[in-house]
Length: 393
Ligand code: ATP
Ligand code: MG
Image (cartoon, rainbow, N blue to C red; front, side, top):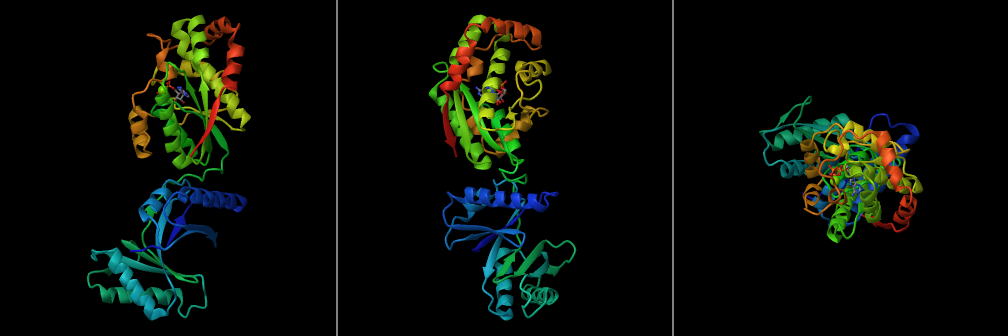
């Protein structure tokens, strides 16, 4: 079957008035972005409260559907057969051919649902429903009508052309990127942070990301892995500005000056501060991390309290109450899992203590940080100054 158009279904309740326009315009933009590398040409537009994607004569159907299934805000994708209006007899024949090709097994129930946006059509919706229902019943002896719960709801829309569709492919839901500002994701090479970014962006939030590496203790391959992860997340979230921060000197300095069981927590405080610096510079409205309560020593309630204390922006932790197995499921679904589990060293694990504190005390941590006073401002400024920024898409 050749489909000429996709009808895009979207439906966040509560988007009214001006918000509705913003939502629809953002959705149109995101659909264009998602289809830009798909084989074929696509015309995306909205009309009469609906969004359509018209496809060129030849295009990659599978790839187009896959790409649309990653656009937040889409609830359903209906592949449409578009026919020129050549009279009602021709429509009858076309509808029978459509049903025949779409449904090999005819032991099904159906209902025709006609809509006219062109009122000069010689039959009204009721008549179209009855007449087309009748030819379908005549053509396929096994098929039955069920007006309440049909297996197949055949939509017939009389516009300039005639649109036939009966299939709804599920979309990802959520809100289109760009309708809810932007946030800064602390992106490591692990399983959790890409999932955290995905979950917040699903609510319409655009992403930037910050990655801390520690060359030569962490390799070029570890960095490439994070770039690859950003690329995978950007398939959903749109282009991501990625800030790659050289964290080596700060880490070595902390290692040198502070109690080793407090290394991780102090390091994480500096990560948050630096990420927040870039966030504010680019007008991000919050930070995002992949933290989940109790997962590791640096994610106990006490540790989170101490880490959080350096931030002035809100910190969003969408995985906070989730078990690892559930996070893994999402990472498999969004296709980041295989990349996340590649075995490259992470800057946090290299300097990690054998027995990190699990109940850090804020006063004591602040006291330990006083040991850093001599050089930390300079190193902090240097880390910001030497950042490498790339846009990943
Ligand atoms: P992940 O799987 O996301 O790496 P994790 O379970 O390894 O998480 P931690 O290492 O404690 O947990 O990191 C907690 C969060 O801190 C991460 O989810 C991420 O948001 C941030 N983070 C950790 N390391 C880095 C890093 N090198 N660069 C940027 N952010 C980081
Ligand atoms: Mg990690």
